[in-house]
Image 1 (cartoon, helix red, strand yellow):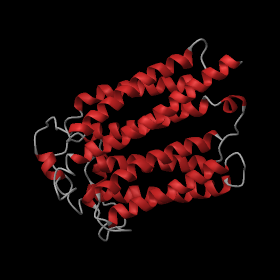
Image 2 (cartoon, helix red, strand yellow; image 1 turned 60 degrees about the vertical axis):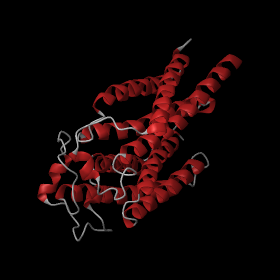
Image 3 (cartoon, helix red, strand yellow; image 1 turned 120 degrees about the horizontal axis):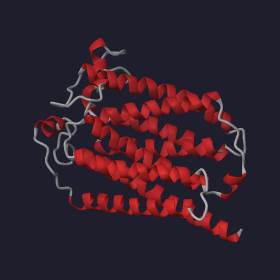
Image 4 (spheres, one colour; image 1 turned 45 degrees about the horizontal axis):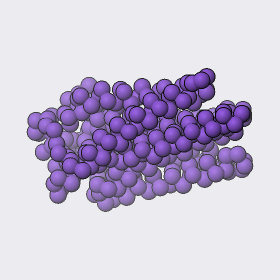
Amino acid sequence: MATDHARLQKIRTVALLLAVLSLLVVLVSAYIRLEGAGLGCTDWPACYGQLLASEPRAPQYGFVRLVHRITATVDLLLACFLLWHCLRPQPIQPAASYATLLLLLMLTLSALGIWSSDPRLPLVNFLNIMGGFGLLTFSWRVALAASPTSIRETASPPGLLLRLGVASLSVTVMLGAWIGASYATVSCTSLPHCDGMWWPSSEGWAALNPFVKLAGAPQPGDPGGVTLHLLHRYSAVSTFLLLGIAGVRALAHDATRHAARLVLFLLLVEIGLGVLTVLSGFNLWLAVSHGVCAAGLLAAIVTLLRR
């Protein structure tokens, strides 16, 4: 029994380290992705057009790029180490399943790097962004699954309101990732409407096509960019209401109170960062913080679901 406890503790420690490193990967990846059209010029994000008008090249990010590569390499090695300990001498479920998915996701992202040098492929950018969120989510799931108490407990299924909130959050995160991946940040510069528009136009739905190759950055008022922003905002409002109500209800139970508080706090911070990003004229670091907070919110939701 002492051996099993030590094994679980080792798995949990490695998974927590992976979660921290994965959050660092999300942060550094966002910095690198935006730096090409951000810190390299003074009129970010307007200079997205300059970035997309040039031929694909291997940009030099110096120390930051080195940190990203080292962190990603350490992540991969730790994921292999984690999966080995989850499988032997006998598999620990569901930690082993999550560790397997984590390693497969890392290998997929590594292969995806072949196409990552071309900024005109929004699908590649989108998959990289979502992959970073997946790294944190799966590593955090392994950490929770390796908790000795979680193995003994039988959790009740989440309520309908919470499940709807999680689905709405997933859609919101994907729409936000697609806005960043397609460089549509400046298409909507006002709140709560998009320059007088409250609903997407018929031609704007084409922006959801994942197989386009960008010829240039969408300009302010671009129908496709406006569509993405409006859908993202309406989905965010839905998420706020659903998860907000579900979180308040979860405060009434001892087992879910701490996780619910974290979810509600990060939900408010995420909404605030989104509003401030638009009002600030899309400040680079607010945009990066918005993405990092979204990753933290996903991890907090996983914790609440586990409870």
